[in-house]
Length: 179
Ligand SMILES: Cc1cc2nc3c(=O)[nH]c(=O)nc-3n(C[C@H](O)[C@H](O)[C@H](O)COP(=O)(O)O)c2cc1C
Image (cartoon, rainbow, N blue to C red; front, side, top):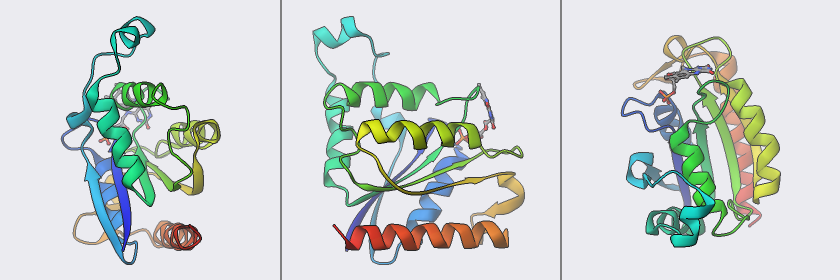
């Protein structure tokens, strides 16, 4: 079984991105899925001064989850065109342990929002920047109008989006097999 690490890059207790990431991970055949809640990794706001006092244990705990994973599925929430503070803070802390944050793990990047762009802007930012952070992105998909297109019972109901997600997951499975 391959170990799939999944999370929504949001600290909202009702995160639609967490729901989407959890659903996407459930589509990986033979996946042993761990879903993280970013609230379990809340740390002081990153600063170089605080780093000199030491990197929080929670940053190491997050890194350990990446180390132990075979593949990673993230669904990104967009706040004012960029990452949520909750996720960016974790990313900053983990990046000072090692700039190779994602350790060449095959990754699927998703985003969703209640609106028509589905967080496409933050998805683009992540896709571009992860090259510099050890990311090996198998594919990316923005899911617009989340509440019209998704239900916990049926998953993605939008035919084209579901096909795109299935294709992404197949590519991820192929990339995992190459490890
Ligand atoms: C402070 C704030 C800023 C937001 N900015 C954006 C935005 O730039 N683009 C967007 O599509 N949605 C934006 N939204 C709406 C979020 O997409 C929406 O809250 C969504 O549920 C966030 O995902 P989550 O449920 O996984 O946290 C914003 C919401 C908040 C609270």
